Image (cartoon, rainbow, N blue to C red; front, side, top):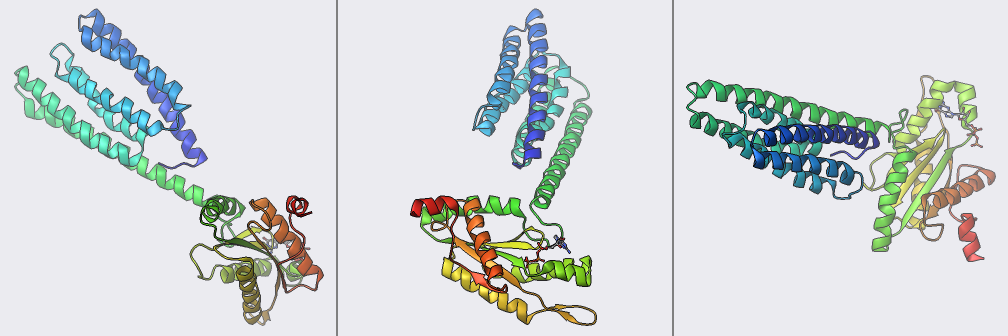
Length: 349
Ligand SMILES: Nc1nc2c(ncn2[C@@H]2O[C@H](COP(=O)(O)OP(=O)(O)OP(=O)(O)O)[C@@H](O)[C@H]2O)c(=O)[nH]1
């Protein structure tokens, strides 16, 4: 199941609604069955009304929600099917078979929803057949077909709905992590990947470095050639940064004409060499325009995990300071040493 913020909110609202519904149904049927003498069934239904209330409370607190939901739903469906086979229960109880796919997909998501539906809907249909035969129903086939086909239709709809919902959510979540102009990752994704890669680097004692780069005199490009050509220059550089190297490298656009590349496994020296190589490649590869080639350059600062800080902000700060140092020294160059992030300086000094 997706774990985006919107996905979590959707899942939470659906879960609350279904659990509240199960609570009220359990309460109503529990009381009514008890009043009509079906004490065991009534007691089980009242128990489940209480369990649904407890689940509402647990769901907000547990780290093992999926396991709790399975522990809630599997006996719930088993009791439902057991109730169907009892001669004392009303035959209309079989309408609940159709709720199995909805409850399963909405509470458990696509995969677990599919397996729960596949397990319990046929069981419910079999229970219905048993009940019809027990009661000497003359038109068993047509009654069974009605229940099986309507349950299948609901199962298919629940599956298609849940699949397209998760796909849409995935697409939206990808969009939120992508810079719309260049198609590179944005700051949000950089932070996400940084957290993951830092944990990995610290576990394995491997290096991790960051290059930050900024196009030189970009305002001049905009002013001279227009904003559209400025955008083309940004995309041109983005394409160069995105050229395949190692799969773990993450080029991203931080905003405006500022870019960064996260380099898991790369030392400061290796990252500096890469920044310099990219700088030379950009010089050899100007942006082709209709009547001329537009050459431009960038200045870059490089920082590395550990020596320049342990979090992204510290690394960005060091790399940013060095990048501006490169600008002051005449632009079109890479700086990999000099002032560190303030907390690192105070540790050193
Ligand atoms: N075309 C285009 N321009 C942008 C975009 N985002 C920011 N800019 C422009 O980028 C320019 C940045 O200019 P400055 O910050 O002065 O930097 P610079 O001209 O590159 O000068 P130095 O960094 O000192 O070399 C501004 O003119 C912004 O309007 C964008 O998405 N597209």
